[in-house]
Amino acid sequence: MTGASEGFDPIAFLEDAVAIPSHPAAGVAEMRAFLVETLEDYEIEATVDEAGNVLATREPTTANEWRNGGQHYVLNTHIDTVSPHVPLEVGDGKIRGRGSCDAKGQVAALLAAFLEAETTNRVTLAITPDEELLSTGAHALVSRPDSPIRDADAVVVGEPTGLDVCTAAKGRFEGTVELSGANAHAAEPQSGVNAVAALEQVLRALETFDDHEDAPPAHPDLGAATLTPTVVEGGDATNQVPDQVRLTVDRRSVPPETAEGFEQALVAHLEAAVPADVGVSFSFTERPTPFLEAWATDTEAPVVDALAARGSGEVRPFTAATEASYFAAHAPTVVFGPGVLADEDGAVAHSPREYVETAAVRAGAEAVKRVLESP
Image 1 (tube, rainbow, N blue to C red):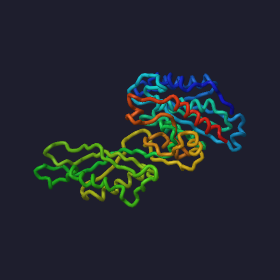
Image 2 (image 1 turned 135 degrees about the vertical axis):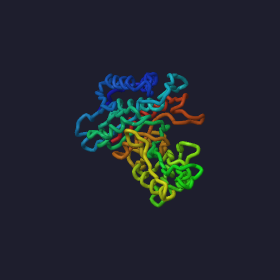
Image 3 (image 1 turned 180 degrees about the vertical axis):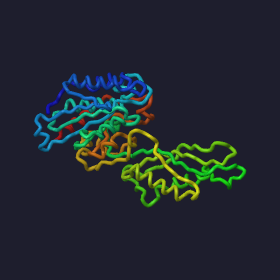
Image 4 (image 1 turned 30 degrees about the horizontal axis):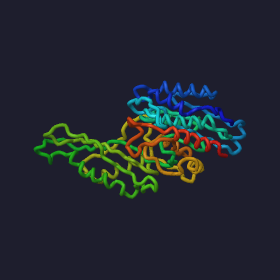
């Protein structure tokens, strides 16, 4: 497969991309059209599926090149951003503005590698919408019977990692514990069952949840899972024993914990902690896609060594949730890209001062390109 374009300029593309608002209120239609038009300008056929994913594939020069030992690489990142839009600014070797590093800088770097690589490997570009909200694009992508993820040998997910290679991340679950009791007059509290009072035992039980025998051990890279109570609602009248209380909890999981396993273990642990006359139930926050679960790729996977040798050289976990969670179940997956979530002065991604260094975008593009070109 010869390079489709040796003249693609990722920095010029990125400047144009950052100038296009693609936060929730604006939508991604304009940014998606710009990406598709760019691919077509370089004679690459792009398709947009029903979920809004942009897909393009470059095949080896002959089919036999791929079948006889070639690899299938999938390059993924997203085109949506958080709100509000931050206008483009260029100067001092940086591109500033919303999405400059999260994740239009990643689009620019991966697109450059995709277009310029001269390789006998198959390469698929899969750019998703809605990563910052519900990941409907990524979920639809992996759910397709013909998903390119299903026969991928490696997936590179573009996120701001400072060109470190990230091979694991915690998952995030959110749900509500509901305690049920029985109403009564506050003057005769013993005649009812106080659900709010049972919170004392529940909060203590949350602190000891990860001490139970089936709890996931601390991950060697990610550390221990966490379980944090965040929101409480309960009681209807100041002179009435409350019969209901709802407690929202935030779970940051580590492999191999799953959402199903967490739910079952949590309910059993809490039931054992509260009085027998207090009912306990748990429900995940409703969403149309699965929560992003914890994931980990073997640090000995070839894509890890190949990318580390061409990036910063550091291999570490990623500190934020990503759609890599959906892909890692199907193929070795790494998170990699220019830019940082935060620097010595504070937040970068998702902040008013979001930026990416142009040299890092070019370095990221070159690193991925070299991996695609490796045998």
